[in-house]
Amino acid sequence: MTEQPQIRITAEPQVIPTNCLFRVERPVYVGTLYVSDATWAAEWAPLAARLLTEVDNLKGVRFSDAEVMITMASVPEDWRVIARSAGAAIRNFLQEGGEPVKEGALDALQGHDLMRHKAQMIIDSELNPNLASHGGWVEIQASADQDLFITMGGGCQGCGSAAMTMKQGVEVALRNGVPEINAIHDATDHASGVNPYM
Image (cartoon, rainbow, N blue to C red):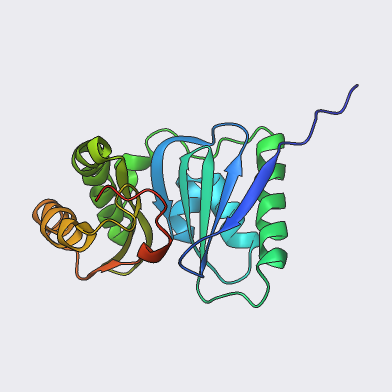
């Protein structure tokens, strides 16, 4: 029996220093789902459950197509150690043929993860389609209870109108659609934008 080739995964620390993004060479989950509740994960999101069990100090996991982003409860002393541990857990789970998220998981979401999912749906259906005409996009980088940390990218990163877009566009749409959101923080590194719209 021939051994199957290892799934390639790359790790990229993010602007928010508690986050690391893993790009996987195959789809993990169609859509976007954030999981921080270990009990819920054990029933509905087996890959998140494994990560929450095997990676010390892990706060939450976001699946988005062929990406897995982890959020730590505090900034790691050495991301390389965490990245190796999380990357191995993702790779082993997928190579074993596990189902990352079970069917019906979205309908079973609850608490702060449900609030974040509602915000994600507004980003996917309203905000990003509009920002795409300017070559931009927004994403939820992290959440803390009812607070969201949003980053802007593409043409929005470094754009002179970014602050106005965040306050008058992104925040208004999210607050109208998900009134339980508390604070919305702009976590964008605007200085590193390479192709701002304005």
